Length: 308
Image (cartoon, rainbow, N blue to C red; front, side, top):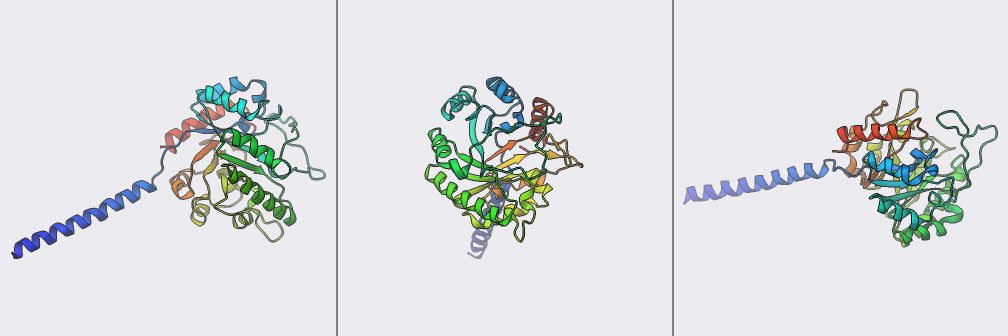
């Protein structure tokens, strides 16, 4: 009888230990990175896409990208099309439209500031763009028709504390309207959001003054690191708030490069993807000398080193 009791006790202990071990293994598995489809932000082709939209999209698909995030176009609308027309074109090509960029409010070029230039140093002609402050209802209605999952504020005026607060109001109003339409609004950063404006840090202010249940963030990893912030620490402080990422690299001189050609270490960031709440990531290269070469280099590096 004593031996039987010992046997049952040992068996129960072994089973309990096995259960704990299984839970531990499952926990580790669940925290591992899960590969996602390759996505591309079309601003990478800003200088050329309007000349041949379907041809550009074919090159993107041939490079292995299947998810698309659109931006503004010199042709207006969605590369000269309505949202429905653009969505159909993408679907017909086997591509999936996940997100669209707009600005938060119109920008004024500071006195004495030089206009932006492309990779060849030529001035960039920026057409008038719709923005959330003035056009959010129209934009949301268009994107709701095609059931687009995400709308992203690509940038917004934050030069003064008043501008930061005004931009926050725009984000809150737009986010609530987007949610009612079945769309999630997110905010995309550059490096300047991590610099102090009077007595506040714009990025921290946006995080604290918007609802995590209503508005998310699209973290541009390179600009975040250049701004002096750590993406992994942001994920820990605000878990689940970063469903979208932009992935680009920067060299030691601060110039944007294809992923893997710069100095940034993306591995610990991708390892924290579950904590971030990552759903989609988009490669982006602002004004590359050769956009096709850039996206191919980025895809090869990501597939080999990060997205697996």
